[in-house]
Amino acid sequence: MKSRIIINVFSTLILVFLSCEAFSQAETSWKPSKETLERLTKNQSEFNYFEEKVPAYKLPEVLVSLEGKQVKDVKMWDESRRNEILELFRTNVYGRVSSTDYTKSFKLINEDKNAMGGDATLRQVDITISSNGNSLDIHLTLFVPNKAAKPVPAFLLIDNRGPQNTDPERKVKSEFWPAEEVIARGYAIAVFSNADLDPDNFDDFKNGIHGLLDRGERKPDSWGTLAAWAWGASRCLDYFETDKDINSKKVAVVGHSRGGKTALWAAAEDQRFAMAVSNESGCGGAALARRKYGETVARINSAFPHWFCLNYRNWSDNEDSMPVDMHMLIALIAPRAVYVTSASEDLWADPRGSYLSLYHSLPVFQLYDMNSTLSDKMPPLNRPVIAGRLAYHIRDGAHNMLLKDWNWFMDFGDKILK
Ligand code: GTR
Image (tube, rainbow, N blue to C red; front, side):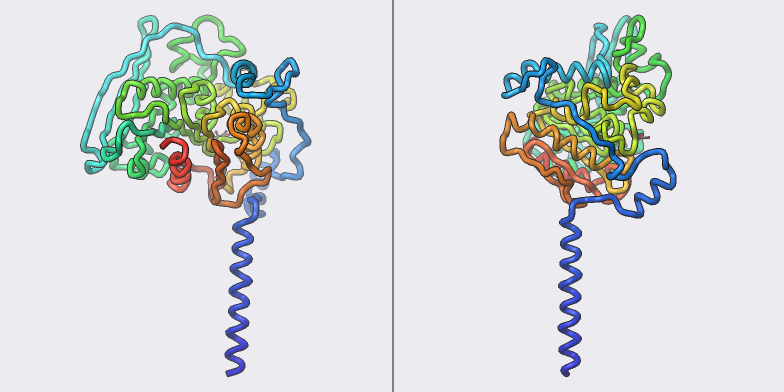
């Protein structure tokens, strides 16, 4: 009898200990696991994945103008510093869109008012961009929830993974674009393929929208491929402005990885977007370049020479001279909403550097809302943090965009877009 009591007490103590341990682990700020670090450093030893090897760096001050003036209020930010930073990003990172005239038209190619078993209306719209006798089509696919009060807010995905993720007939389903789940939450969900604007390969800017709109010699600040995709997202927003079922003032632009870089730039360039979701965008997206953790500017410029403008090559192995860093890109979206994510095994995209970008963009968001605060410590795994108009999570697992991520985007959307 006595020994049974002792065993019971002992096992209760073990349980209490284990659950405290699990609790404290869940509450601990995220850090890369030893296994992930070992696996990555075995394959890619020339890139840094160790926090202690991140070099000391000084970020450009987001609220100090080029003339050295401190930005004190929204008016000064909005009327001068914001434009200064936007121009710096156009000149040094993504490039400037072509100024060639074009015309645009929308054509409803297919409509099914009884899609998804009656839950949604499907619209497939061709957005045709014409110039000088030539044209290009952006194929937009859109589902609108039938049961929600109109107009509805919408999520627009810049798809960089191909049509198998975005089947309009819904025979093939993918967590990358979980249309049924988004419809069930009362949002419209839309998608276009980045390749419609510019195929994702280096062809010296002969094809896609560059072939259609670029004239004369290519300049050091002419738009690259990411800027072309971002421009495409804005043309989809032009269409939403004509669709009475969509609340075009409540559109979130979403992208994963290279698409996540693009989503940030789309929302920076086009202030009509209410929210940007940048999923695991890493270098050239949310991650601070000066940390040189995981993918670097030199690596991205050599692997993807078409993504950025030519001037961006000036910052290969020279990040500290770059007149901007990526916290300033996030700041350009203020006071609109930004959701940045990471994944625990995706160190290539520098989770901590992505979180710190949000953190260092805060002074601008605080000009609008003094209650926005974020800790400089990363949150625990799978625990989204929301600070006013900024949100972040680090999901367990590999580089991808899953339903779990989307559910958190929609939770944030419920605060921002509804
Ligand atoms: C990688 C690239 C990243 C990221 C990714 C993706 O190869 O280095 O910058 O954009 O591709 O888009 O999946």
